[in-house]
Amino acid sequence: MSRQIIPVDPFDYIIFGGTGDLAQRKLLPALFQRDLDRQLPDECRLIGAARSQHDDASYRHFARAALEEFVPQEERETECVERFLQRLCYVVVDATAEDGWHRLKSLLDEADDGRIRAFYLAVGPALFDDIAERLESVGLIDERARLVIEKPFGRDLATAQELNRAIGQHFGEEQVFRIDHYLGKETVQNLLALRFANTLFEPLWNSAHIDHVQITVAETVGVGDRASYYDRAGALRDMIQNHLLQLLCLVAMEPPASGSADAIRDEKLKVLRSLMPISVDNADANTVRAQYNAGAGPDGKVDGYLDELGEESDTETFVALKAEIGNWRWAGVPFYMRTGKRMAMKMSEIVIQFKPIPHALFSESSGKTVANRLVLRLQPDESVKQWIMIKDPGPGGMRLKHVPLDISFADAFEERTPEAYERLLLDVIRGNQTLFMRRDEVEAAWQWIDPIYNAWSDTSQPVRKYTAGTWGPSQSVAMIERDGRTWHDGD
Ligand code: NAP
Image 1: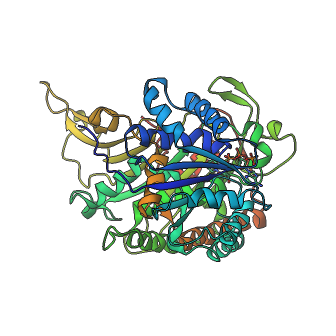
Image 2: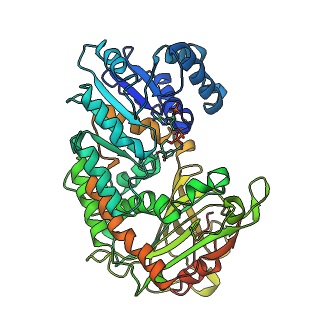
Image 3: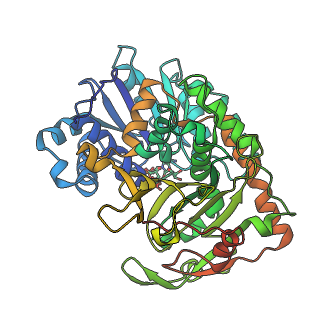
């Protein structure tokens, strides 16, 4: 089955931070892949912007090295690499000074076909306001302009509101694209398709049939030399506030009235506003925070978090939460979330655990009847598996077997699964905000997260320890086992 490529209108992408890690690892490779699929019109230009001294030629050289490092060799067709590099230009700009802004304006004005101008801020959030202000002062903010920003969207409700206010002074909300790359993953979009393009699941999608939901985002990497940066964030801010809560919203939201971006985002917002508060009264029972100690990494022995940081800290590298949604559909269904660094394997998945059968028809000798489970694997190897009971084929009486109906994308479609950024970068050009977070969603998420931090501090909840290379501290296992359930640690 071959994928349909729908070309987009001509555009200019301006990547502030075009020399940074994100640009090299994700943005340039993603745009290259779209060019490889001939989705970029000939006129498109990609403009790197940062303080480092480059001209177009040296920036192309820089970009070539990024492609060589981050795009597999078999996908780097020479002709396409050359075509892609010819699209690149570079402007030296300093977000905090006057240098370069008029040059950027005149470069963009060279294209007079009214094309979209997407300004991607692949720089630290402290520069967002400066860049927006300077874009405005040189006359680059008009109806063609779109702004793409990366997390962190603040570090609490107050700072998120301030960031949104600052950006909102220059850009209309319909021009702002807050990227959460988890939402660009195929499996996540497939969740929407499964729920709303089939009649099979929706009648079962509620507390009458679903026992609980688990969302796990586990990494094997530690913080390494980013420890001092990471220490200001922690797992709750860095992962739960955005990625895991967004996944929870897509699982839990009501069917929207239409597929429009705002219809979907309205429903996600209602979920965030229906989350039962976690505060001083219940934080001990419903949250676990922890740090990794020395242990095993993917390539051998690794240090603990505090050794890497070189000082005392109670920043969590792991968090497990039990969330509940206070509405008619989900009352009484726990949503267990956990995320951590230096865990046993790199794995992100959503598990929808259905309730057990109400009455056992088959005798014990047939084997155990295991409750149905829908597993959406985001990484590695994106896939959807619906676990069901069947009869074990062959003679010998009725023996039951728990097996997955497997829709593995790689096998079913025999194609490379596109990176989330490929989809999202072009959604910006299409003006489709469905997979981007709206201002009120970001703020509602913080409104739920802030009291958890306050509770940790007010109750002095200890930061637990776990050995690097495991699934987290024993308290996380205890949290879910108290409810008679277990974490699903991948199949
Ligand atoms: P980085 O490697 O430190 O790159 C920062 C970029 O900003 C560089 O290109 C730097 O270039 C430029 N820059 C710094 N000060 C500037 C100024 N005054 N004016 C103009 N450009 C300036 O950071 P990164 O990892 O790419 O991350 C960028 C943003 O994306 C951060 O907010 C980060 O939190 C977010 N993010 C990154 C990732 C990732 O995978 N890396 C993932 C999610 C979110 P010069 O030094 O040449 O000016």
